[in-house]
Amino acid sequence: DQNHEDLAAKVVANRNFTTSRTVDDRYGHGTHVAGIAAASTNNSKGVAGAGYNTSLMNGKVLGDNGSGNYSWIASGITWAADNGAKVINMSLGGSSSSSSLANAVNYAWSKGVVIVAAAGNSNTSSPSYPGYYGNVIAVAATDRNDVKASFSNYGSWVDIAAPGLDIYSTLPNHNNRIGLKNYGYLSGTSMATPFVAGVAALVAARYPAWTNNDIKNRLLASTDTTTGFSTTLGRVNALKS
Image 1 (cartoon, one colour):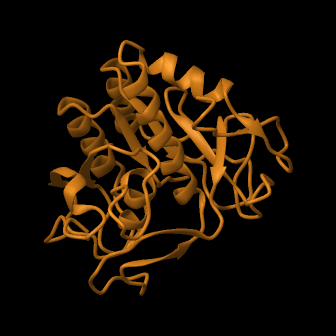
Image 2: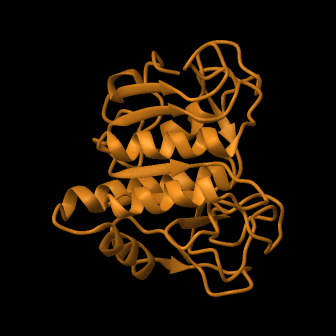
């Protein structure tokens, strides 16, 4: 939602890659994710994004029903990489691989972009794409006790965890599919992912000479301990990073 009171000042670019007639968020999910990563801070409104002074490029890659094509996502990745994005957040995923999606991810990585994606909400170790790709940081979800959220995917391909249960963030100020307006609580690895993307932006701002691989390694090496996963998985820590 480009004119939300807590997001409007952060949006620097908009592009629609879908068949929707508008770049605006008619579903509700993207606005919630954007607030977690980059809602305005110190404005006495709503919430504060993890990325502090981070700006937002609003690339709409899923339709108004919340689903879409890998080609749309790939186009959004390429657009972001070509227009100066330092971090790409993808709170989305599918169960099958795609050469166009993989190529777009590798292209963005080659341009120095940190790429972060949701691990999925099926309580399975089965791959979710693009999270499964090697050049993507795949994010699982934890609760307030740093325990695996019941729905969160897991497995050796998942890189890091972040809070994903009952997360309060921005929602569209107009009617949407989710049915909540302005602010509200949602759960999912979709909510965990922008915490990691926001912290990646903080690290990039703090260490401007670092590569995307440097930033990824710092995030993964600076975590707090979680429990409940089948593999050792750390929860992102902004201060340590």
